[in-house]
Image (cartoon, rainbow, N blue to C red; front, side):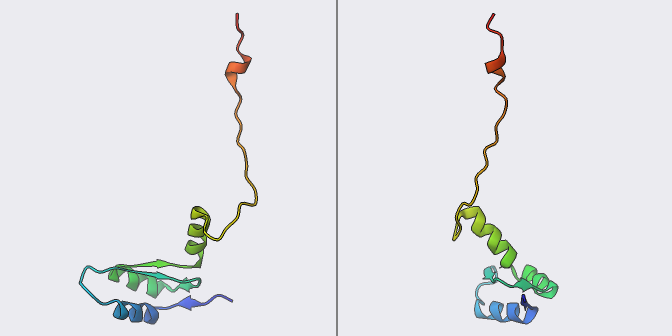
Length: 85
């Protein structure tokens, strides 16, 4: 069961980090964000990272992950087949 972070939680977060008008914030969760939370955060210059994005970043930067498989991509070496005459 996945939970959803709504606009009220983002508003509380904004209140907690209130500072200069050009301040920004980063809200990270393993849950999802509601449409209203996303719209509000965009207006407040808050970056939202949900569970899917967090997983993507962990894989991209190798944080808390291990390599299970690696693939090699090969191409034909045309020089190998060229006639030396």
